[in-house]
Length: 358
View 1: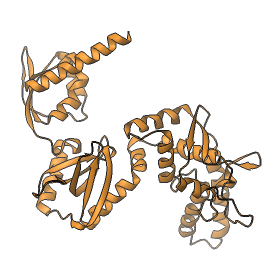
View 2: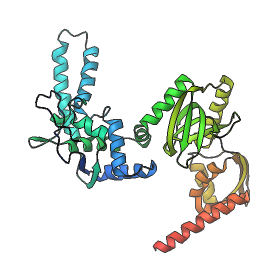
View 3: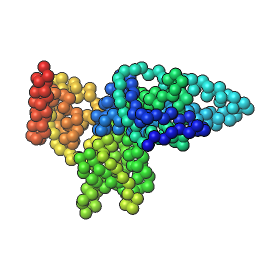
View 4: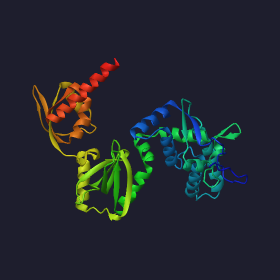
């Protein structure tokens, strides 16, 4: 139900309208492509869901929230400049200059691609309810009328210009806060993956790698036996994570040290997957690629550099897939046979798709 703004409202909220919850936004090409990529990477249900989540999780920290940012900076400056006899005047001058800078930046983003989204109740009420706390309407006007779409666009544009891991932290803010609380309180988590599998997890840490990973001791929810198996869960592949206050998440110090060692040796993405002996033949160009591509590069336990350059690794199949699929014809999996066949099928499918498109 639309909530009308009262005449004596003292907060600078956005004006209500019958279509206020329906927003037509025009994003820069850069922001559109970035957020479209995040929708796919984070498996969002679409633009409305993504925009609502990003705005809700980020507006409080965004520079685009000019009033909130000025309040934070004013408090910081008053504390920093406490030694000045005229600090109030000095801080007022700083705030005037900073307000202009923030507004200029927020309104500087170019036009590009148009999208239509529907605001959820939480964001709608924040923007329009005098008791919701929003004080940004005075900074976003089209002529004499305030424009909530300009504010939402500025928040999204600022989000899009952050690095991927920062955007992932924003998008999964609630999940990461739940995990952080569980680690601090030594409580168990219940993780539901996007495939529907459920696990109880005694959390050890959240690791920032290519993505954010929860690492801990896990066991299937339907298992009666307590497990000491170490496993990692990619945050963006979780459907839901809940903290159980009545289930202990305590991990002994020796086990914590073991988990930390596994993270260093295998990488967070590959913790909990089985190790195998894998033999790979590299061409001369493949050897050069192996020397140059260092990200998640497996370490060989032996190698022969004769006419047939064969490297032997003891690592996870997942790491071999991640690392050597990019080598194409310059890396041939010799063993195990199932992994060699998997690579062969992958390249055949890629070749067939390329032929269809040509």
